Length: 165
Image 1 (cartoon, rainbow, N blue to C red):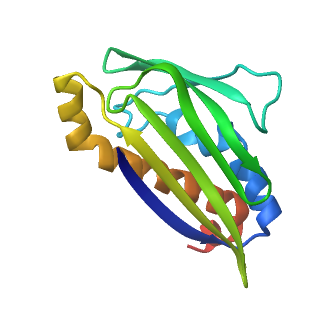
Image 2 (image 1 turned 90 degrees about the horizontal axis):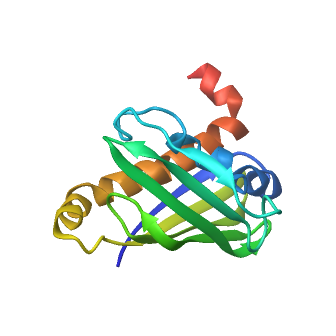
């Protein structure tokens, strides 16, 4: 298994930061928008559980990237507002550079806001071609995801910083 970690300080109360990051449509926004990392593609998000957040909440991401199908489900496995959230892929995940992952964030109150620590732990695919792609692009993709999640939250919580700079 491979892991990546990122941390950011966000100038907002832990409860507000948690509420923002608890929404998959906000933390996963980078996957639902066309980007270079997604090769111009974007994924769709579907809520599968009756509850949109909390323990057991389930979502499905799906679409195509460079003609290849991407289709996977996630389930929230730890949910302790406003401290932490963790989710994992469930079932047979069709992801180009990983076959399974666990992602999450931990929130710690700080003097001037909130410290958010995010991580992703993943297993590369078994097939040699996709395993090679994972070796080459997995760390880059994971860093991109974590950075986007943290930066998107920071922008939503600190809109005045975006205007000034």
